[in-house]
Image (tube, chains in turn red, cyan):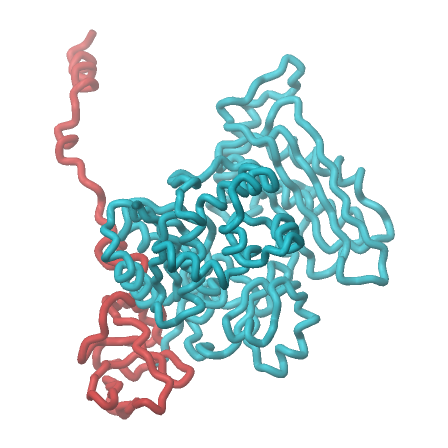
Length: 127
Length: 421
């Protein structure tokens, strides 16, 4: 047996030194989706939030288990339509604030069909 | 006293549709069966209009138009995913659940103190409503049969806010006095008819019967239900799903099929699907049946329901072997001159693949064929269904028109919610 072959035989049975450090590979789902049962995905259509970095075609990760808080980025349901805005609770009414100077805030009160459908946790953009 | 809960999703399919269509809140909603033939789910508003379960769509058309009822084809991808979300929340809150159907699960509440149970049920109900968007009714009682009834109370009384604890004797008796006996879990339709004939229409009437007369009239099951109504648990907690006894694939056609060639393609496709399901679950079938059905809502044509079954020498999960047998069975039941509305294949007498007994008369190299099936499944799962298929399956993949189907909001990237911005 040559010297090289002998070495190879010895090494074949030697446990990998990395074995003790084995770890599970990174999983984006685990990082971005904390509550799978209440998480939904949606796609953005429009540019009213462009100054907040939300562009047409971006993907939203929405968690319905998060209580809407003042100033949160929220998927709102207003009079038959889903819309993405900053949610401001004004007591008697709410303001849905765009991030684009060409758009005006939307005022909603008891006369509107309105609900905060879910709070946006992450935004995914294709670059 | 130990307690068991039943969580029942309210009008589940209709509620799933409403999660993504909040404008339908308060408007009647119905969901149709696989081929859009019948109404299989109704919102409360639709029930209030008098629309019955199983009504053929064409019979309800006028009412639907007049009352502005929202109509959906069934979207099982969506309902299945929403169901899994509800079940996972339940799992996170109780030590053990038993999924009873797509929209119902029993909850093991054994360890919980009785004085917190009502509030627990209401809080859990509110959590599911907020986080998944589905309204549920959670009944809590000493037995499964009573829990089923207390969950129905939540639907009757909104003030219970989706959670109802019922266990005191006087409460139980009061509720049973207004509860129809035929709606009690475990009282079958036939038993209900017999009870009605004997003058017993409420659950309390049944509850008040002497147990000796029950076991005489209705055997073991009837006595078990009677005991459960009296708060004595007789139906245990089954954590593991029961062994599957049958696998069935059937479909209604949007247009009647009249030729053997058309039916051949359909039956062959169903059989391929069936075989794939068997292999996925590690099962082999000893028996295969094929059935075909003419349109039952047309009186002007001859009616026919035909079924034929056949046994295998060696239990099998092989697509080719099953399809060959299915084709032969179809030829025994097919008749010219009929328009067929539905067809299906069913595998029965299922055994785990590992337990299959060989036969000296076996002519098939099962090892080789098994590897071939693995290859087919692998290709079909990576390249889409029916990339590899039998010649007899033909070119038709979808036999139904799905005109009013909502998006697969949670299971297909191309169909996720769109948010205006």
